[in-house]
Structure formats: C-alpha cells, structure tokens
Image 1 (cartoon, rainbow, N blue to C red):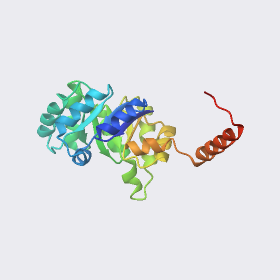
Image 2: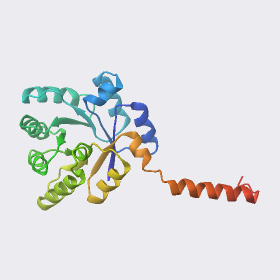
Image 3: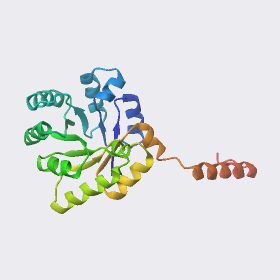
Length: 217
C-alpha cells in the first residue's frame, strides 16, 4: 500500500520523505488554510519535493470553473493530480481532464455507487472518507471493502485512496482490505511505529545491557 501524507506542512513532508515514507501528498482547501501560505506557492514547492502524485483541489463548483482551475493547478508541477468533488459537475470535469491526460483525484466519496461513477469517468484516484463515516456511526472500512470488490469485479484501474484517516488502526485496516493508497496526517503515520511492548522490551534490554558493563564501541 502506498503512503500519501495529508498535509501542506512542507517541513513535515520533508521529514517523512527522508524516512522513505512518502509516495505522494494530498492537500485540500482546509490544509492550505492551516498552512497560511499561498496555494500556488506551496503546491509548487511540494511537487518538487516528491516524484509521487500531489493532489491540488479545485474550489469551483461549476464544470467550466473546475476545468479552468484544474488547468491552472496542473501548471504547478508534472506530478499534479487535479482534485475534484464527487458531484455531477465534478464527474464531468474528471472525464474531460482525464481524457486530456491529467491525473484526477475524485474526493468526498461516501458510497460505493459514487466510486463506481468515478471509475467510469476515468478517475485516477477515488478518495472515500473513512473517518467522516465513522463519525456517523458507520464503518468506513465497509465502504473500502465494497469499492475494492466492485473495482476487482470489473477491472477498473482507478486506485482506491483511503482518506480521512484518523488512526494507525485505520491504516492497517485499509491495508488488509486492499486499498491501493492511504493518505494520513504526519502524526498518524508516525504513530504506526508505536507499541507499549516495544517500549517495555527496549527498556529491559537497555537495563540488562547496562548490567553487563560492556560497550559495543
């Protein structure tokens, strides 16, 4: 499973790139707002930091606006994935942009039917939002499983990009189901390395090593 980091914080991205934990980056208007930076400036910088796809979201709600904005953000790097919402206008824009040769990430997916439509429209990525479904007492992983089954049934090449990841458990669950990609905030990716038994075991090893009075160097 590929790891995309869901942030516009370039320092956090750089840290994870150094560890080899970044296959791409996703951003959205909320993350751009949180960064406090100009969208074109930060997206252009991020696109130079990684060879993987960098999702940059359009904010227009009409077809013509999405196409115009999509063309504009695509100029920011050769690895830009134009992000459009899962609306009829978004699906129409997805079809046009994908036929032009652009990567397209269709976002705000909350049903298998929506994911099927996105695949038919030629989406490169479909972004089902796990955490927001969990907030409504629905199991977001059920949606990932449904999409995986449908895409496998018919050989769709659209990649399932598990989004709205809230925990390390979400990451492992998405991997077990077969999501192609999971995008998560930097802190969630870091928490995947944590386990209390690892800490306890290390503490014991270090205590026993100190008792030997030895040195490796």
